[in-house]
Length: 496
Image (cartoon, rainbow, N blue to C red; front, top):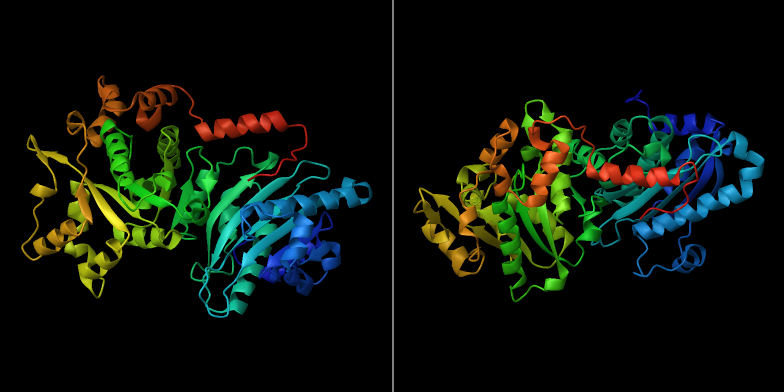
């Protein structure tokens, strides 16, 4: 049961008084507050086997090994910390306490705001724990961004979220959604954001990490989450670091031939840009929360997984975001990379972008939004539309006289460009019409989507396709197979 009003000190005290729970704390960099909160709560001798702070890089390397990247605030460092500290607990205490104790190892590696306030304050936090004595362990790992403008406030927020994580691991395990929600107890997104979460282990075999990421965005804990083509959750700033980014957004319900044509030819044209290194390009399909909401009831989670499964099977990296306006999406991506960003849009999207009514809340109106949207490293690639039997491109794009000079300025300065290589036969395809045909069980829609997409829709009864097969998400099938192979043997391989 979710105890919404329980405070941080009360959580720490409850854990301290639970004699089953015993473990170690290892904190690198600015994240020194979690263990301190357990000490201050009282009764910590019943919980804490050891605390340590490998603040010096040389000491840290000697304990946990050297990172190939040379960086310390990375997931690989956190996993090494969890593995090292947890194995020490078992090695030294299993004989004495193992039959009656559920061990845990808490670790974080964090960089807080520097004195000049010029850096990105963020960190990796994780807990490796067992729910029953002598059982296999589970991992819950999160990545956070600290937003407080004072170093001391950032440290305090880290302590709170650390306590919340350990408490959730032991008292909310049966409801991962509740655990996600509880991570921000006594905190606000204006102070700290969680942009990645990953569950792993025998007690989380049925947890889909993509759904947990969706909960992060839906609850406002972050504005975007990212999945790789293998369906695994990614931390955006690491996955997109020093990358050129190409994005196409849409409902993608389902992916049709015209959308694949947009992605493939848009990507080809983006890679041909003189300031783009083709070997460092990440192409993404983006789903906004607005496009995920099927009705007033909110987001259909199965429908969300259907779309992600298909996109990942097509080799796409997938982002979900809370950015309805394009300029907000660009501002977010520009924080992750300094390299070029491309947006693939259709003519209807271009019409939306130039609709002044969308920017009335901005003091500078459409010009203020365009200052971000069309910054030095951003370019729109426009896919044609079929209207009245004629092909409609940027040459036919009509705007009010007051906006026409602005559009021409952007075209002439290489900020907007037509996608010139396209399959004209695909232009008649309407995603809404394809979806209607699928749901009615009509013939002919199969030719309007990639063959692999048609196979998945029929095999798994996706998007309302009439059949009786019980649907299990592709990602969940893979994870269940992995768990089946590891149980009853103790899971010992680190995640990452």
